[in-house]
Length: 543
Image (cartoon, rainbow, N blue to C red; front, side):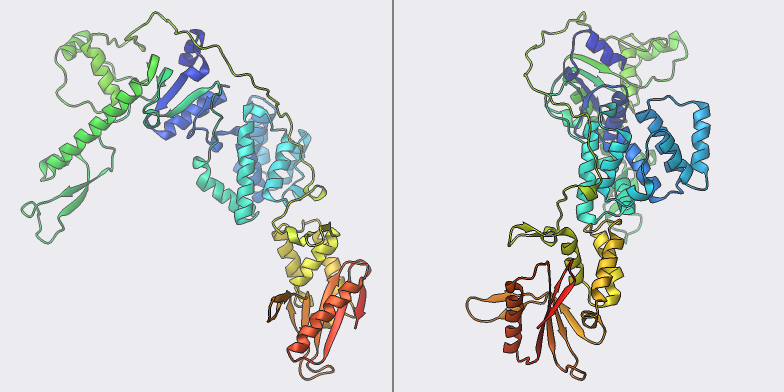
């Protein structure tokens, strides 16, 4: 952070500064460090959602709603509320209080604590929302928009919950499992041209240039990592057993120098060394004006005499890390001092090149609030839009009647109403609050004295089966319900066609159902009955 402040004091802008790391995990650590200290940053692979505190707060509350007995989730949620929302530093007394709430046998004290702080998550209601609605509701409850300058992370997380719910459903436990598996690969992309520090890997910086380059963790290995495998090839003479295959897969250890694979092992050492040097060359040649390298401090030498001897007689063995390589350079140039922690190898007397002051004029409209209202009371766009809207007549039907109509299509027997209502809730067509009302309406319909017979086990029913008629043009019809009477009984072989309609009755309702009956006559059925049932009025017309 001191290097960034020094560059800014010398006249450089944030967008002139780049932090180059050898590994992606190092980039993420640097991104988290700078972001927590308020610096705007840009990186395609380091702006991970898992490092956004506002997102971590949402996930912690998700975990509590999913598993109220999760003590770690309770503690994390309360700590993040204090840090992100209330901006309070941790204290021993507060930590003990949080621990008591987290370890309580019941989750109610946890939610009561949030209510006492002014954040009522309404756990009984909120836990039954879809993923997107739940996320939106919690953002509004805690007022997270604009917190820690992390709004872009919130919107990316909202997109994630919407994408997951559309693909896999609204199961909260499944989403948390998905998040645990994918969180390290989920990130945001900041807009280009933003005045922010660039954080990326050395590999992705090839061909680019920056005003100021900072290379942290400049201590990567120049030798193969532990457990790296070597695919060695053996000649027939080198095989210890004639039957063994010509390829030996072994770990790259120093012991290979005493085996027939010594030459191949030495070649791999050279390749790894050159690769490490190439990465160092790329990193050190990216700056236009200033380079900072942060490396590991080697162990202090024994004495000045031994230090001088080391400088005059370079070590015969190969350097194993970049840190060791830089150390040997300082020894060879007689600059090394055990007491020093910083070295200036070249100085342009703090001169800063002239920077372009021209900036594009843009109009910014800050978004300070994300309005969240109960989803049952607002306009909803559904994948099952045809169950809510009648596109043929371009007329919005009564919503409850349309939901009931859709439920009846999926109800074969009167005993199916519980299962159908559960499925509609799972699909998002009906909320948990609406479920009891739907069950009442659905039960009243299938138990209607004039309709109950058609939802019993005494008959065979089909819902929305197409009737195909040959000829040109081909016509397709789809009655709401077709009921076949058994061949033995009060109405042997009768076919009853049912349509469920919204009042008032209209002549075309009867005419269309009679047209259905005519098609069954063409199929050879003689006894055909027609039934119209009207929602709201519960009127039944039999003809």
